[in-house]
Length: 439
Image (cartoon, rainbow, N blue to C red; front, side, top):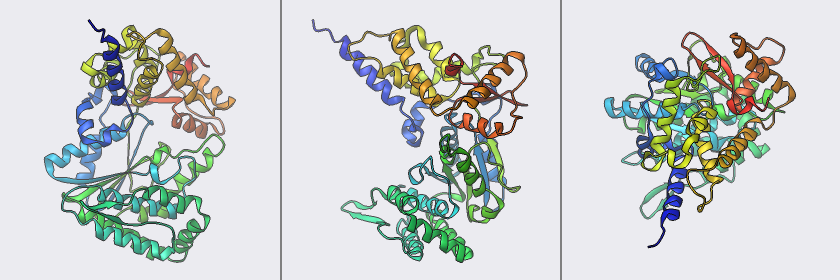
């Protein structure tokens, strides 16, 4: 008889790996398959997404909402799930864009190019929606907008195919090159905004208005601009990037960002305050421990369910054996880190290696993620991490008080070294579990 156990294990590993890759919530079919209905009141102390949607539904005209929270906390998944449910139940229209492909994560934000990128991302996102939608008019408006700047080398619009119209490949990358790497292109856009701010705003709003008018759905749609919180720079230019992004959401640009005929949700870092007319919501990490470090069972069980949904046959012990609780603990309640750990463990496991995996494979995966999180930290960052750790041991929540600590704390949260949890009334920082021993 042929021994097929090795082949079966290899298929199991391949499938579990594919199911654990990032950004799968963008596919509604995949998202529905892997969705876990968290009891938000237990795992995060409160549900932030439903109040956000209700506020939008009750607000009149255009609105701006800022959604923040730890990277990897599940903001995109939670928001997209709720929007799809609202679309199915009430006919609410929505459009989602990921600004990541348009802007380098380590580069400061300049208002003029970023506003152009947001409009272009809306046009491209509409083009990817199927059905009887006017795809061409928004592209024509966008092309006219670009003509004002005399941008060259951009293939803007829809390409003709035998099956109909399709988005020109590489558009977002081309635009990023034109506005971020080409100094002349960036300067042309900035100069036009400086000379003609009213015309710039009118053109920008006309583009997105044609997008929203073509979008299926009832009433004013919800327009989600995701991944602005991924723009954080490195340790040497974090402050410059922070100030640039904070400046974009100042009163100066409020009339530009408040898009007509839509409710716009910007996913931003936690330090962004916005203007008085902007609503703010924060989705923090799933709580897996109390401030004193003791385990929090509802959060741990919720993350176990995340793995069960993705494991072939729901069998997570086949891969992890006795290491399930350890892996969940070392995720720190960061869903992205949890899935990254699974992928790293599978990377460390050969097709012929026996399952469950060895302790050495788990340790190696944890080390890889630890090194990724801690890369680029200075000694003063580790000083803050030690203070956070010690404050948890004494029962006093850490608060940045020394000069420069607020910015360094934000940086530590942006890179995942610090996690934030809440009991509802207050939140606290905790050092990522993978870094505890590293301190």
